[in-house]
Length: 132
Image (tube, rainbow, N blue to C red; front, side, top):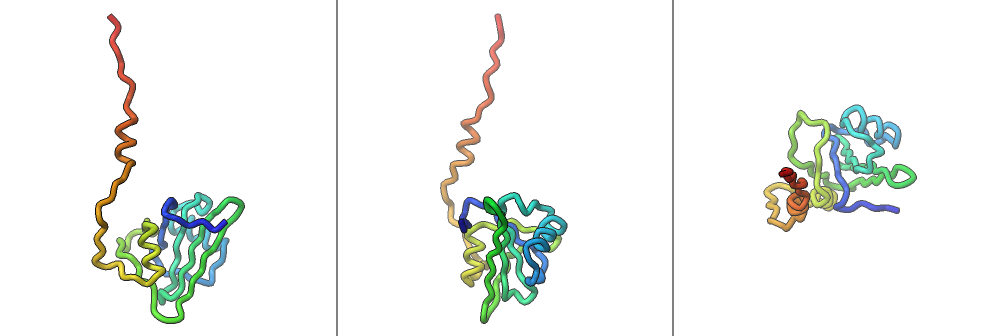
């Protein structure tokens, strides 16, 4: 089923992509240019040169899915990234803002609780006891 959420990892292809490309060619771009595995379950984002069309490639159980959106006016704003990179990891919230046409400039992420560091502290190494 169609299942994009904040539980997935998202990678933007930093170069302009010929949006006419289909499943196999986009998989080739993911492997050769982005250095990732298209069957990993990650979501790969491609934008054309005029930034009017976006495609998302995602492996779901049983096969690949392409999500495709073309704007009738305006363009997608890309996040700021290092031009030396071939793939830029994005957050779900950034992707949603990009698709909805919200500006990503001057955004401040407010502090939120993240249980991941706490889980790291709970994984302690076993205590070694000396024999007497």
